[in-house]
Length: 233
Image (cartoon, rainbow, N blue to C red; front, side, top):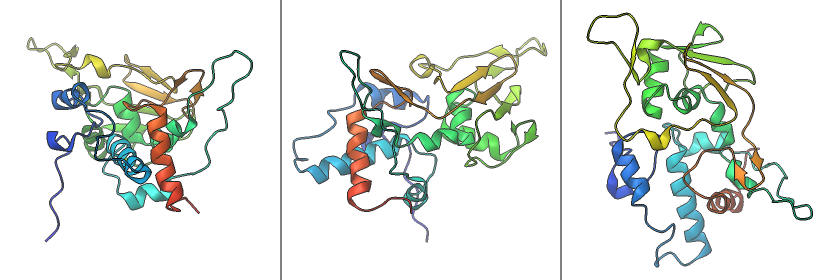
């Protein structure tokens, strides 16, 4: 008998996920310290960082699938010249490959209220890639690819009660904290479409890859995979 999947927003797990659910905002607001007093060794810190960051960058991706995607080669931008501000730890970009997935782009563009809703929309033919209907959530797009969504499938667009063909904007409760757009996406809300421009990068004092965790926390997760030899061949 297959093991029952854990609830992605179960409060006891204390994992922040890709969702507008108020439970997720509660997790973010009440998140305890990154490490507790029982986690004292370096391995415990690395495992905790791996668990939390993988819990956020998750779209029903198994560990085996992630290990095939993981690339230990990161950009070398952690340099500081004279008094110019330096770049954050580039380990914050270790999950950048996931941002090319169609399901991630649909969610980051605010067309879906969660990564699971984005996968559902794609699987049911509500999403097009370069004008063609597309049903593969895990597909990784190329620079310049256009992802469009049928307006009646967008989470925040609802049919008005008066029967007008024009859809009304109906925001979710507590949606505001998640309404930000990464710079590597160009979104047109009039046509419900997004252009993927490029890979996320780091800039002085900031990283473009959205995450509730600091770059140094990602660095511990990166070291976890490096130390265990789990790199892509």
